[in-house]
Length: 358
Ligand code: 5GP
Image (tube, rainbow, N blue to C red; front, side, top):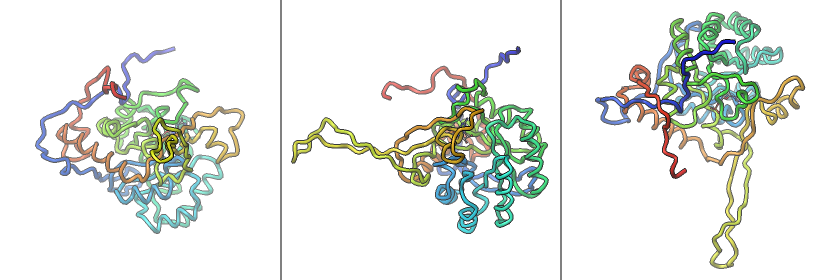
């Protein structure tokens, strides 16, 4: 048995150190980036924030809303081929990816979709554990058939496997095991890696080979997203932060509560209505039942189901998120998102937020 003794960090363990800056307004800060991908050699321009391929997040409506701000969506696997074809005619195919697992049915579906939609260039190959040999073989198979498509693959959390996936054909490696808002992998298996350190180490490994990474999971506020970019992420993927909105197409749950206040006219207690949306991990019982008819006996569920407050249209959340990251850039003196990691010095903290009124 071996123990790695260096301290590994999460978002909550650090803050950005402010630095002298010549920027006078956060309006001056551009969050767009331009990347050329290693294998596909395709160029991409946009704001490198992605909706996760989860129910309630990676939907067609979300893709349309995010694309209007130049953000990206990895579509959930259950979006039909017809819906994808329609979407490709509505928004730029540079702003969404088709997701696939590694099963035979997934492989067939992917080929059908890409045959019918030659303009779609992004493929997201997604499994909970990107360490199996067969996963690397699958990435190589997809690369072989689609030499000019941009392939995202994951998830992993270490430099060695980031490099392996890039060498087997991935352009972009998805990084994160266990940090997700509705993930229970760490509880269920004890496996994981602190997300900020995973980003720093995997980004370094990927960039050395001309590859890119996505920081996937664990962001709970705009500050965390900024920290992921500061740590070297090329893209940041969000589930929970984008959940609860109209565009997630989830079912609204209404709950009625009696309040202490009396209605002046009737002298009866006023009834308050609170609205919620169900959100769940893609390997939760809820997702397994919905997509596969149940959890197979040999595996346990590694995701949970939660009820979150309904948040209306996603537009306000996007503006709040982008505003926060622009502000980070002004605090550390970064003219644009590209400069953010170069201007980043993290300071380790034992407490980052004052919770007295929460
Ligand atoms: P969040 O932004 O909500 O913190 O994290 C989103 C990420 O959590 C997703 O992109 C995906 O990688 C991961 N995830 C989604 N569903 C599940 C699940 O059921 N189990 C686990 N282990 N991870 C999940």
